[in-house]
Image (cartoon, rainbow, N blue to C red; front, side, top):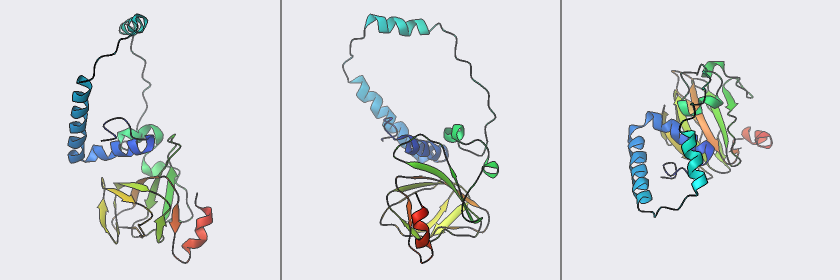
Length: 200
């Protein structure tokens, strides 16, 4: 509902838009909320507009459309975030402490959330961890499992301070997730605790 009303924060709004590309049920719900919003707007009394504002708007109707620069877009990346992702998954500059777990930070301007891609190598797992805040995750490719269940491309997961898990990618292929967080992860395993000072 917040997304349909245009009130969703930048990174979260982009995640919802990516999810909507794959989920017909959620697209239908957003359409219902938008229809409801339209009915509410129709019931609002119109506000007067300055004549100069109206003249400026009408003068722009005859202006030529802006030139759109054609850019080759990575086909595997959902359309809503392509402007922040310069290449397909295999061509991104992944970073990380091991080859099993890699990350790519998306340059989305949002003061409240950090947005990243995580790539878990096929058959590998993240360290056991919980969360200092909220983490919204959208599976982009592949699949992973944790104690709560199995997740596949298009699935949306919310984890918070009450969630402790160890996501493991399925053997068939690497799992790529789009994660939006308002606080860093908190490692809980014996070796993971040594990483916490480096997590921002």
